[in-house]
Length: 321
Image (cartoon, helix red, strand yellow):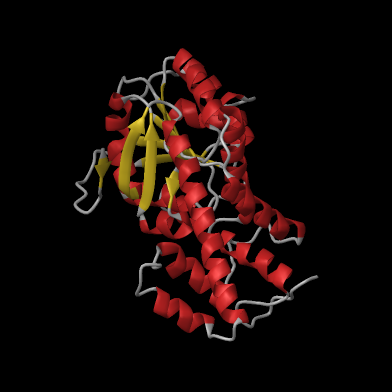
């Protein structure tokens, strides 16, 4: 079931806890705060001033967030981070153990919006359910731009009742909200999304590199292609990044590497072959080997440029041998 937020209605205030205030988590938390929700936050990095000024309460641990909030949202880089925050020392599970129900008398709801392993998600959900709380996996797509604009695509796995309960919060964060199925199905959908995105970035990079090496203006080639069947969001946004040499991270290569690793691990376990996914993963590894893991995933093009000894467009990027 897909939903849009074109006509969002004001939702009652919810006591929300957000754990993880990075590139994605911080703007998501800010949108929830602006919508009038009561907020408790915890992060390893500095809490953004806008959240503090808006009234968010800083907690010292994930356990404290779980004790004080009715809905706990995690937005973290990788599977081990989520496992540590949910089940580790002073983690969410300890807070739920001492306070399993919220201020409204309902079981507390944990929503993991990170992009992590589907199998690990199922195991963690069992632990959370055993404490009397509810669980949803709800990874997102849209990057930093989508997080700031509240236009994220949200893929949700879990029980229908839990999804309905969380829907007003999701509608504050995104435009395309789909309840895919049971626990872990949201994460499976996100892995599929990351396969498509990676292969599209690779295709755009190869096309623009080919055009540039042949002597054509890659900016004008991109403009022409945007009016044809090759048009895509990747060509629009990441193609522009490649031409303008703008690789400040909206979504880092190292995080996309992690997601493709999940895809290839799952493929091995299911006896599948994903040859082009493996190719994209190797191109990202070339970038990482040249110290580019922290750049935006559109910088995948730089691995092709390194091999070709040619840049898509002139810039301050030095092509290594």
